[in-house]
Length: 312
Image (cartoon, rainbow, N blue to C red; front, side, top):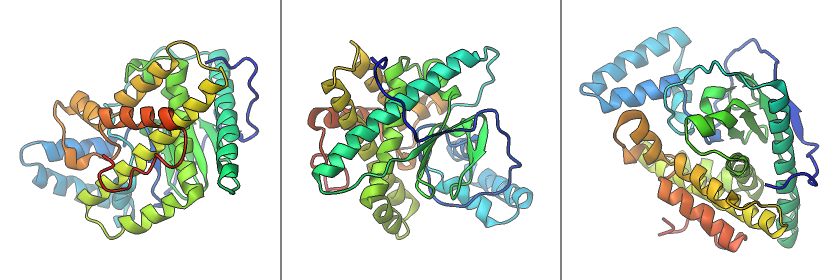
């Protein structure tokens, strides 16, 4: 992506290198690209194993004893991040210079999303209020979505209207998800901004209201629709930057590869050797590629209604 002449956003909050005292955050649902964390992985593995119900009950009781109360246990299930592969520790830490370049790149991508969505909202007679991008290391508190963790990947917190990204995910895209390239990361940020667009339009509130009335299986299906719409919005933004002459050859392919890499079926197959479709929360690789491509094709609001009957 050609970023040399692009402006940087003023809505970036850099918390890298800061530490926090931990504690228990709120239970507001957050929308994200990455993994659900160690406990979420353990629960899914137990469900997939023989006698999974018995072991799930045991783990649940232990978790309640250690963490104190149902609030923490419930938060496992309201975190809608994709299931991740087991966390790995890298001995090749990025230099401060490379991290600065990555931060500058994301700041410029964020600025371009501000320009695009301000324009699209104005066409609808609306005002767009951009989100803040929080860059952090390892973990950080949010105002309403609990503690953000690098293991969970990038996510959007609708409660404080911020996108959270640990720059280590930049390398995870290449090493863990095999989706390299700067525009793969640009897609990730554009997807999270897509959730903010949903928040601005009131879609997120309607989603939360509807979800309370659904079973876990049906709620997962509804969440897939929410995530696919964020992919559509990411594709719409990609069409905009392409029209600005900012894309390099192969950029769209990088984004499509990233969309495919974070599909529920692909992640579960890689992590567990099988899939559980009823647990999908973000959509299959094919669905994610399709809706990103559809957004790139149309670049509007009208063709991005993933909630209508038969949308996927």
